Image (tube, rainbow, N blue to C red; front, side, top):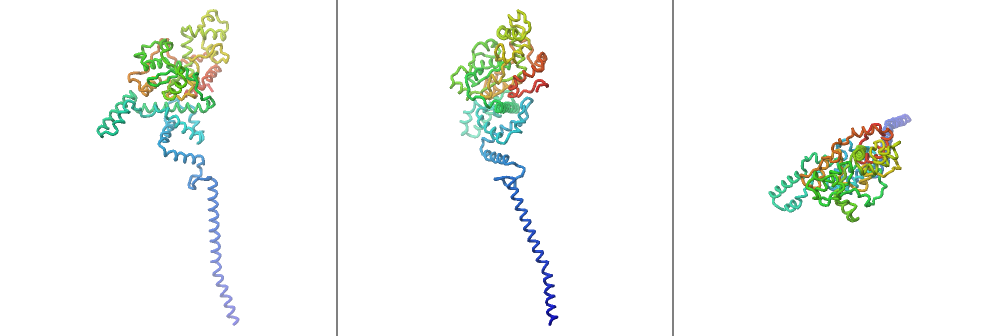
Length: 458
């Protein structure tokens, strides 16, 4: 009997030994599952904390909140047709542009915050109306009513209107191919965008009130709705001739003499109107200015006014300049004011206590035309004067046979001032004076995107 009980105890222990490993495996599996769940939940919480609120867990962790929120705003605004035009305008800035188009501009774009980029896009929307003339496809002013009245006609009639519109569009573009038209449009738009960047950076604190003083150098042509701000030594004589032809005051530009252009008072100036007339024209007319490499323009002014006979400038400027900056001047030089040297002219320009004031021929272009206050539709360059001027004339609907004249009627035997000539003149002054002249015109270099004329400038 005792043996049977002992056997039952032994069998029971053997059964527990067989069941014990199963319990252990169950406990181990349960613990492992709990550990995996704990780790997974911890990873999820860390991911949410890293990405911030409102961000999908599937997004790339390297994307910042600002970038994602900007993309979401773009998707929201992308639903409107106008925003697509804004994006197309912004894409112009990344298009291939010839040299001297984008100084410091790419750098400013790279360092700009997403917020400032969004603000730039908003400014594009505000100025869209003013830039309507610079669209890639030239408008068809002459056939607008004809096309609209033909909208309900038969298909054959529509096709004839289409072909008529195409031919008139070609006539409107003149000698410009669609590729060259688009290229010039892109360049001009890029200049305007750069101007806005520079004004926002350096002139944001200026008053926004336009006075007569700000528009005193702007000429008005009412028939073709043009406002031209003159920058002397940047083709202004020939542009004034062209404005007179547009106004019907002369049959052609070649027949208009220099004194008639500048002293005949044939062109109206914007400051001659009342405030309502000034603001109406600023808001509705095409506003134009042409600029030139600043030091080249300054040398051209010196050569024209001081190296050639000119009683007015020799008397008004030459006499005080010679008197103040020349050591032991002769009696004849003091009496006539003739023979001002380039170094003396530079000394006068850099003197904060000038013996005589500034003159329009060497005043900075940004001071003459105030482009940070007046939103110019067209900023042309003297270096590409003929092509860009004729492009502008086609934009404004001027007669197809009218082009900007290129002749030089003052001192025609003198060679036109070039950068090579400019550099020769600046060998007559010290390195410090050369640097200071560059500093004097520094804002023109920035705003109108001209590179440094000398390698040793900082």
